[in-house]
Length: 82
Image (cartoon, rainbow, N blue to C red; front, side):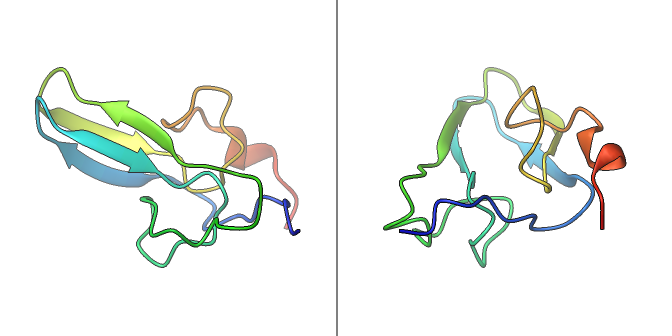
């Protein structure tokens, strides 16, 4: 089982979320539909994080998968090594 989190990209994904909608943020970094889950985590022991939008707004979803405030970016990618 490969439970290692992969960095999808160093930097956030700008997403316009819609009030009332659910979004499933990819935690593993393997999804081809970043920043959202496409089921690629199967067998890793990792699962997506459900985010429910209470209001319509622009959010910045974490791309490095190391944010301390998932699913949103907190700038942690600036401290990651290449």
